[in-house]
Image 1 (spheres, helix red, strand yellow):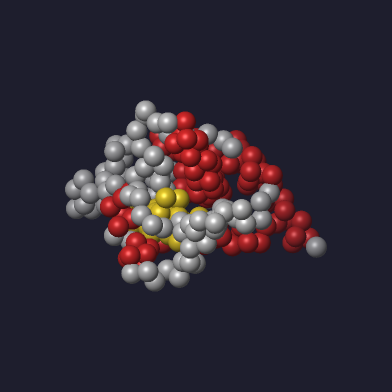
Image 2 (cartoon, rainbow, N blue to C red):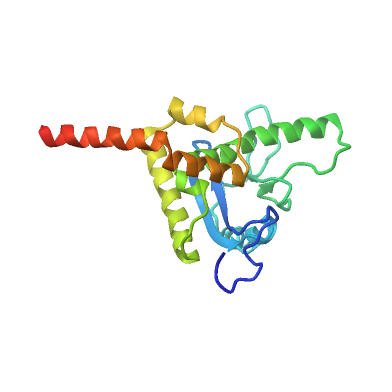
Amino acid sequence: MPEKSGSMYYNYKNYFSIVLLAVADSNYRFTYIDIGAYGKECDSTIFKESSLWNLMEKNELHIPDLEPINELQDQDFPYVFLGDEAFALTTNLLRPFGGYHLTTTKKVFNYRLSRARRYVECAFGILSNKWRILHRPLNVATDFAVDIVIAACILHNIIREKDGLHYEEHEINELPIMEFEDAVHQANYVRGGRHANEIRNKMKEKINEMKGM
């Protein structure tokens, strides 16, 4: 809990947090991040206070002009970011239809939109499973926590550029996202349990081998 912050960082899941707003491409790389907003703020508010929104409103993002989706289409369509129901519909931001009583056409649209949005969900999954420090509370000052998340995102992109998509990461990405409390319990168990000792022993053996070369 940040000092003298009151309930500003207290989110709807009943713990303290800062928010990472991000845009990801089809290679699971982050193309934009905004980190440090209060945990109690909603996604739409955070987005409208971000530099990405300001640049979009000023038409300074250099988004390509309208053009047909394919050669069979005559109608021009804008390039868009994809978001969930928390975001407002704009010319360059597409969100799903809201409500429960939708026509078949709207349901199909929402389904296909959600499939496209999986890339950003997968990017977050790969990030958190690669950098296990994100599985537990960061017991540091808020500014330092922001730096840790920024560094993790940068390293994530470097690894994506260098190594691409490996089966191991893909397999991790298919795991269900755990609740925060369960993730904290598992992370703490792995850090101090037999698995952690095995990793340390293997590292020691590797270092000794390198010293003997």
